[in-house]
Structures are given as C-alpha cells and as structure tokens.
Image (tube, rainbow, N blue to C red; front, side, top):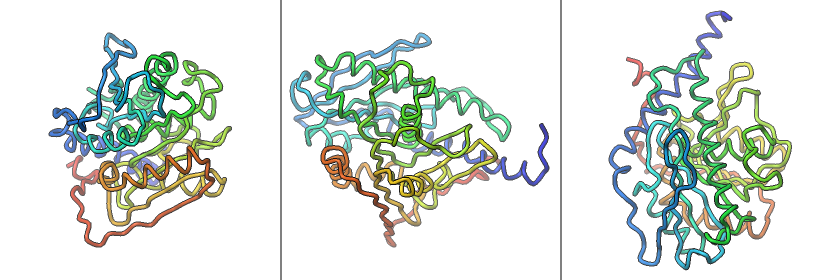
Length: 325
C-alpha cells in the first residue's frame, strides 16, 4: 500500500529511531558487558538453565543473601542491548542487584534470545523484525517466570511478589510483558491464568503496539517509570502511525493517571537515554520506597515527579541522522 509522501515521511521518522536506539545501546554496553558483577560479600549467586530454545541454553542467575530456599520477594531483571547484545551479569547492574539483595529481595537476572541480532534493515514498512524481537524477549521472560513458579520451593520464590524490571530493551520487554499478561494474549499461555506480576520497574522503556494505544482489560501492576525528556532513542512520549506505534513512559504515565492505575513516574528534564542506567545508581532508595509502598502496603498513589538537575551533563546525543549518514 502506498501512502502520500507526507505520511511516509512521518512514519519513516517514527521508525528511524529504532536503529539509533540499537546503535547507542551497542556502544554503551561494549565495555561493561564483558565484566562480571562484583558482589557484596553477603550476596551469593547460583546459576540455572531455565530453558533451551533454538539450541540455545537460556540461563538465569539467582542472587540471594541467605540460603537459596529461603522464600523472599523476587525481582526478575531483563538487561538492555537493543535486542542485539547484552549480558545478564554486566557490571552495569552491580549496585542495583546488591542494593535489592541486601534489602532482602532475591534478584533473578535472565538470558533471553536476541531477536534482532543479524538483522540488517529496519524501516518504516519493515517493522516485523522488531515486533518479533520484542515478542521473543517477552516469551523468554514468561518461560523464566514459569520456571521460578514451578521451582518456587527449591529457589525460595514468593510467587505472589514477583516484580519485573528492565533497562532500555529490557524495559520494553517488561512493560510489554505486563501489558500482554493483563490482556490475556496468546503469548501468555505458558503462565498460570491467574498469575500476575506484582510490579514493574522500567528504566527508559515503552510498549510497542500493532493495536493502537495500549489499554488494559485488567489494571496493570503498580509501575515505576524513569525516562529522560530528551530521549530520541526509546520514545519518551509516543510515535504512532495508524495502529502501529511506540508508547513511552510519558504517555503511559498520563494514561495511568487518567485511569487511576497506581504508578510512580520520574520525568528527568534535559536528559536522554542516559536514564536507562542512571536510576540504578542514583535512585535506589526511591526504588525501595516504591516496592515497599506500592507492592507491600498496597498504596494507591499516582505520582509524577519532575526532576531537573541543571548541573547534569548529557553523555550521549545520538540521533537517527548519526546512523544514516
């Protein structure tokens, strides 16, 4: 189907952000990914294979500060890397994992299949590889969740308090996963019908929809969102053309506020995709506060925080034009 040139230009601009997003993440993880997490002395890691798909062993690292079978609330973490690369045990996440575990949560950091690895071209009219990559990550997250549920006694998992968290591509995956589960889509069949995630913590994420603006049959899990207002790589608000679109943290927070879905949104002015990583170092106390109040105490807060540090400096300013020269 051919669109008028004006509309083609809009659609092209919408999806040109995708390769730039991938390119940025590739650079940002290049050095960190190869360096394994340095754990706090009281934190112990045990590795399991939770599934084998397409001849690939998918592993998870379970971090705990007590015996493995001691039951605790659990945070499943999904790494970033543009669906091209990334490591579940990158040292980028050291401080975040240590903080959660030393505050008596378990952390489970998972592998997932990288659905855009080797893909050469994404364009306005060729978004199916991206959709497939997101769906693949979500299905692997569901497989990891099912493994934890089925082995909850052995691994000490409180199945009523499983929280999902992710950075960038991982943030897309966790927001998408909760949305799919709350709408009982076909992707969710491997999880118990009544199971729902207890919370979502997203660092620069979005939902990718082929069905227009995302809505929820069942209210979403309490959700914590961090996003920079100048993020040109993972959309901050929304990019939509007819029924296809990316719906970022700002759009989701507005939607949650309107529907009275509990959420906490930190809108970081003047910053871009750096916010995919910064909160895992600078906002750890706010994250612990969110879990305690929203998930344990069941508070029904609708919070949007405008944060503007005039001394903050951008470290990455890639745009689509930097990739398409």
